[in-house]
Image (cartoon, rainbow, N blue to C red; front, side, top):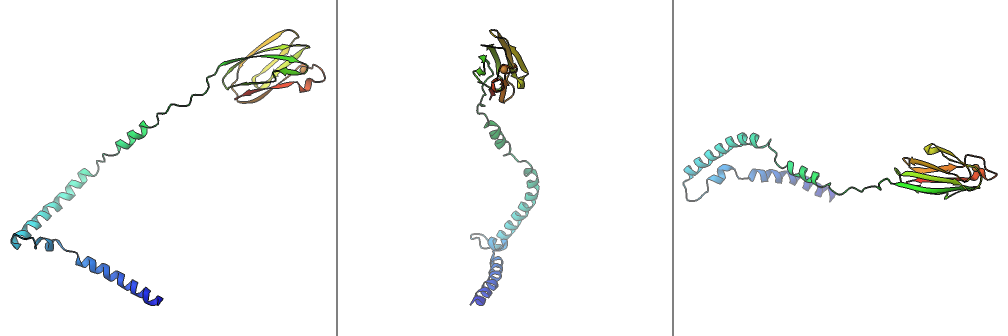
Length: 183
Ligand SMILES: [Cu+2]
């Protein structure tokens, strides 16, 4: 059964295509049967029209094809779309902090700013001499007891930056530190 089906399909397909193309009506066949006119006159008119049309087509196409009009429209639409307001980042501001240094902490020990902010620190030692070293921004100050040191810098580096006591102040000196968070 498989052999018969396969043979029937393969043999019928090419034959049917050939029959269809062979049966297509020609221009002469279409022109002749028009009613109301004599066959001779109709054939002459059809042939003359076909000849004139054939001459016009190759002359008109080269002139019209290169001019592609619809391109500018989509370009203007694309450029007009991206007009949403951009998300504006937080503008840099001046942020001031009062920090107290005492054995063996900085209070507050964590301060947070945004990148670009100007940071003003007023640091006061409440007991003995301490130091304040914020290496990421080149800050290193001695803090004499009872006096306040003012430090100012621009927080232009994102990250968690440690500050430490840079003057030995007792057995807890090594753990006296804090963090500047720059977002
Ligand atoms: Cu110290």
